[in-house]
Length: 290
Image 1 (cartoon, rainbow, N blue to C red):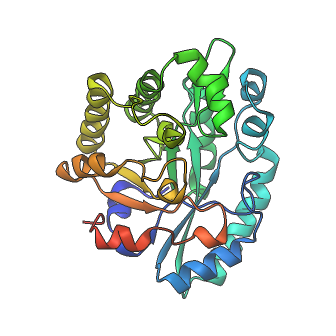
Image 2 (image 1 turned 180 degrees about the vertical axis):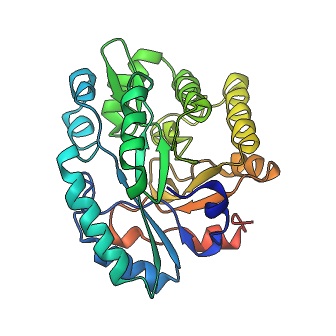
């Protein structure tokens, strides 16, 4: 896995750092080559493939909510050999046109930290780049997704935590755990740290999503990332989603990250070829790469 110094050498104005493709069972199923060709046409010179890393069997025994959120959450372990082989072949095929970083988006779930650490050590020499993200929160019934659907959000984490601002506090507390987690080969970039706001436009405009406690947690997260000289996923997938219409982190917190000189890596979070460069012009025009 690339170290911090190597990652910092990558020019961020030509780097796409968060992408899925055919190994993602909640994506479009389009072949990786179509993504790469679109990325080359868009002007990217570095392209991180960050497929959802497998989860342990215990996850499937403890997760609740929609079947879609559970069974399409990640690759399966037995897919990894095929994944690595195909990605290496693609990396070599396009090496004269674009630098492909083979990697994963890895779920941070506190009870599976030991398992995750073992996998990071096992596959470290085959991984170039990775993102650490939170998609699931604990509830009394089990782990529940934050981002699968509005109905699942309401019946799961919202029912557990009662209000959107409480969901925000729980989500950010988990993100802070992830940032503080000390693990060998841990990813050095954190994904969509405000994913809990994915459904914000489906609620009344008077709904409170941010209070002093939320702000304090966000400040703490950014302070730790800055202290560790790590990276933040500047995720544009929500900007074009009618339920969200903002980036993650959103504009105000991007400004806070920039005050701390945290490197913001453009993330299309592409799950279909059409989204490969979504929002990239905004990222460039806003100079988020500086």
